[in-house]
Image 1: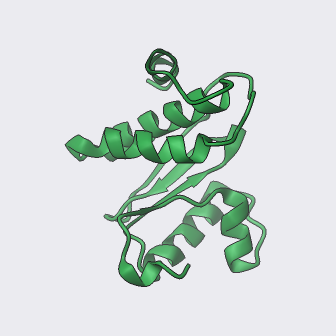
Image 2: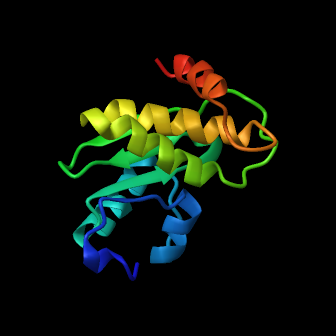
Length: 132
């Protein structure tokens, strides 16, 4: 919350962190989108909310909400999955396509969560095919 005044390009709370920020319980994607919009009002340009097995929601700087379902796999270790999601999103956004960025971010985060270490390129692209 402290960095929002600097208008960051992207922030990525998970749904539980979003609930904690505002002291609420969020049950639907519509509610999550509503609170992502509050973060935009506070300065974030794009808000990417990871929701583990429930997928991910992106509220882009144009006010459009995007949703990506979760990849299929067995979680081995979620450490670094959020950071991997951000890396995949930024790599995918190089052409300015929010939909692709969200899918690549989801695949990259999933590939890390489904491995013992960080995601591999092959695992990322295998999961990306699931999200087409």
